[in-house]
Every structure is written in structure tokens, then in C-alpha cells.
Amino acid sequence: MEEVNQAYKDLVFIWHPDRIPGDNRRLQEKAEQKLKSINEARDSLRAAHREPRKPPASPPRHPQGRSPSPPPPRRDPRAPYSQNRPPRRPSRDMSHADLRGVNFREKDLSGRNLEGAILVDANLSDTFMHRVNLTGADLSGANLFRANLLEADLSHAILRNANLIGADLSGADLSHADLRGAKVGTSNRLLVKLTGTKLTDAILPDGSVYQ
Image 1 (tube, one colour):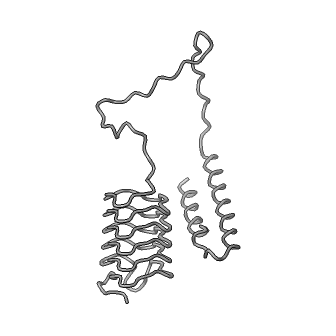
Image 2 (tube, helix red, strand yellow):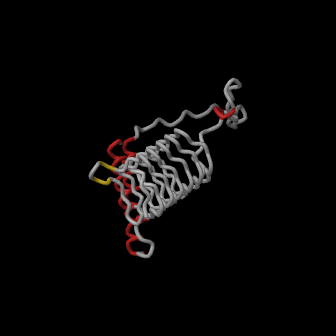
Image 3 (spheres, one colour):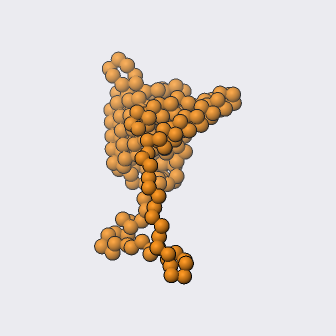
């Protein structure tokens, strides 16, 4: 399943419709069909990988022929209230949230609002962040290895000492962003995709200002 998941991520990275120009409807439709096939293939392999489960035993019958109602789940009175709640998915609006050190590895945060969020030392490697709003967010020391930030808004964001190697910033807005000390490649090779990226007045990793 590890190989299946990695192959799935690679193919979605290539065929996601957001990577196709919006005015090319033919390629958009082709990408949507391809993505549908990729999802079906992954689901089929996952289903084949799961071990068959035994059907649950029938509950005891009520004397009058009705099944008794299951007792309500018991809450541990010693545990904080937050530990007794089911886990929640990341909210679409996380503006100004304190998310220091959070692990969003391989999550899909596309289109979410993270304006002004504190993501210092966060793990965002292999994360899908298409068109995410990170205006003024603090991503100091964050791990954005191979993150997909296609058309993301990172204007005025702080990316000091962040790891951007392998990240796709195509069409992203990095104007006025602070990239001092960010990892973007080796001494002679840039390892970040910057096709159509807006860098007006951004502070580059070496401390110079892009004009």
C-alpha cells in the first residue's frame, strides 16, 4: 500500500485539473477523466488489500421482538472535554489560527483560508495547497518539501528558513514575502518550480530584494 499511495500522489500531482489552464476546456476534461480513473484504481487496490471481515454478531433480541437500544457512549469524567469529542477535519477557515508545529503532511488543504495563520515549524510536506490563502502567514522553519502551492496567495508571508525544495509555486503570489534563509535548491541548481510566480519586492533567500 505504501507503493500504491506514492504512485497515487505522483499521478495526482501530474493530472490534477488545477494544473491545466482554465481556458483549455479540452485538456481540463481529459485531466478530470484521468483523475477519476486514478481514484477508481486506488480505491480498487485498497479494497483488495483489506482483509475480509466477519459480519458482526446479531444483537440480542428484546423479549417483545424488538432489539434493545444501544447504550449511549460513556464519557470519561477524568479526561478533558476535548478528548471525549471525535476528531475533526481541518476547518476551511483557519485564518489567524495558531498552528505551530502542526502535522498536515499529505493533507489536502486546497482553497482553505489560512490568512495570518502561525505555521512556524509546521510539517506541510507533500501537502496539496492549491489556491490556499496564506497572506501574511508565518511559515518560518516550515517543511514544505514537495508541497503543491499552485496559484496560492503567499503575499507578505514569512518563509524564513523554510524548506521549499521540490515545492510547486507555479502561478503563486509571493510579492513582499520574506524568504531569507529558505532552502530552494543546491548552490548551482534551483529545485523549486516558479513558473508564472509573482515575486515583486520579495526578499530572496540571499537577502536581496527581487525587482
